[in-house]
Image (cartoon, rainbow, N blue to C red):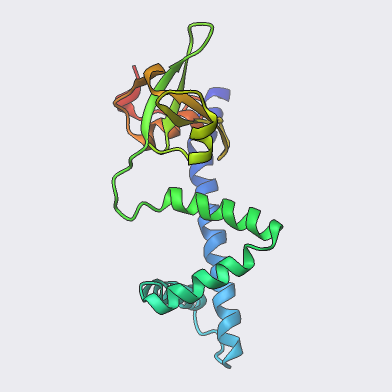
Length: 195
């Protein structure tokens, strides 16, 4: 009986938590939209009305950001706000995560690699860019250095290390599958990667 309960828990819990998170997001955005509608004197008629308004606003914002003058004004405002250190740290982190998630249909260019450790073990990493910043390259000894991200398990954080390209072992493994493997410490694997 205990095994059956545990099996049920581990199968239902991820689905229940995911649905609860999406429902909470829906309710929050619906409330935000209703709050905006109340400013123009429109009363709530149906559930989801506010959510639809927020979706329309986001879509219109996407259209506006494709126009050069709007983008110029937004970039100018962004630069002004970046003068405040706390805002710069928070906004920069959120923007970086959003950029990592938003690929706009472009193929992922992060290469999965293995790096040998001192005790003959290996760690999975990702080449995030082929061109490190010039100040870093100027400070390093001669060689072909690349920044490699080592993702920390169960966190959206990682450690970036500069590694010589000759010390990397390239792995034919998609960024999405490899990062899922790293984020869950190897627990989450697609059927193709399980031995």
